[in-house]
Length: 415
Image (tube, rainbow, N blue to C red; front, side, top):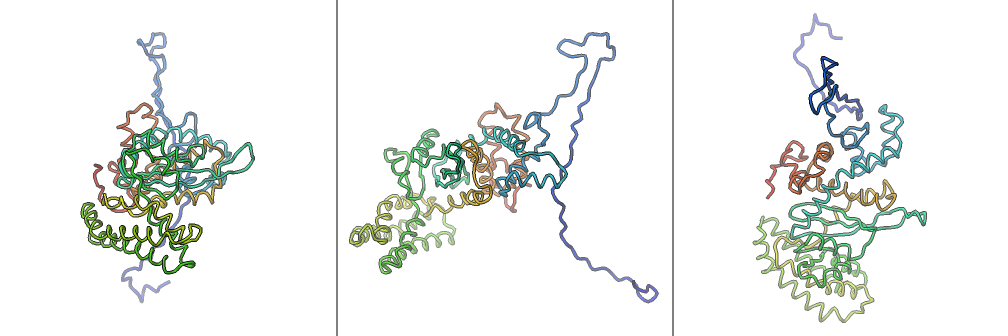
C-alpha cells in the first residue's frame, strides 16, 4: 500500500486484456397468453373455442428443443469450423447440455437442411443466369454401405465470377461431363464457362454453341514447370511467354482499367504473344514425343489454346481458374476433419450448406448472423416466389444487414 500522508493520487495506468467466456447455452421461454370465456356456460363465438391461446411462432424444426441460434451453430461448427458432431456433443456437455446424441444432432441437421433447400435451388438458378462462370470438381469420401468402405466421389463447384456466388453440386458422386452438361441445360446457361483441362467439359459442350469454354493458364503453366528438368530451354520459353501475359494483366490491374480498357490492352499486347506461342507449338512443339514431359506440356497447351484465346474477346475473363479452386479449399480442409460423408444424401446436404457458406464468404457476410436470421425466416417462406427467396441469398441479404459485414465496406447496391 501507499502511505497517503506522503503521496497523493495523480492519475492511473490502464492495461487492457481480452477475456474469454465459452459459448453459452440458456433456455428461452416462449410465453403465450391463454384466455377462457368469463361465463363458462356461454357458447363461444362462431369459429372460436372456449379456451383461446396465442399461436406458437413457426419453429424451424418441429418438436425440437433447439432454437434457431443453436441450429445455426451446429451447422457452422460442422461446415465452417469442421468440428464433427461427436466433438460438438462433448462441448455441449461441458456447457451443461447433457443427453444429446449424434442421431439427435443429425436429425436436427437434416431437417434444417430441408428448410434451406429452396434457397439452394434459388442460388443455383442465380449462378447459371450469369454469363461467366468457373467450374471445378474435387473428391470427397462417401461411405459405400455395400462395400463397407469409403469411396472417392466427385463434388462439383460452379462460381459466377462477377456476382461472386458459389454453388456445390453432387450427383451420386459422378465426374462425368454429363453432370455439368445437364446442370447447364437445366438452367439454360449461356456464356463463358472457365474450367481446367479435364476432357469431360469438352465432350459436354462440343455441340452446344451457347457455352463457350475458356481454359486455365495456371494448369497450362504447371505442365511446363514439370518439364523444366527434362528440357530446360523449351520449358523456359513456354513459361516466359505465360509470364509476359500475367505481367500485362498485372499492369491492367495497377492502372485500374475498365473491362473494355483491359480488352483493348490484351488485343494490343497479349494477342501477339498468344499467336506467336501458337505458331511455336505448331512448328517447334511437334518435334517432341508426346510421351516426353515437354511433349505433354505442348500438346496439353495446344489443344486448349483456342479456348484460352477467348480471353481476347472479353475483358472480364480471367487467365486462370484459381478463384474456383479457392472456393473448393474449405471442402478439402473439411475432408481431413469429418473424414467422410455417410452416404449420397449426406453429400447432397453438405452441398446445400457449403454453397450458402461459400457465398457468405465471397461477400464478406458474417455466416453466424446470416444462418441465424434465415433459419428463423425460412418456415415462413415455404411457398415463397423466387423473388422473395432471392432476397434471402447472402449477396442480397447483406443490403438489409450492413452490420453483418465482416469488413468495413460500402455495400454496392445489387444491380
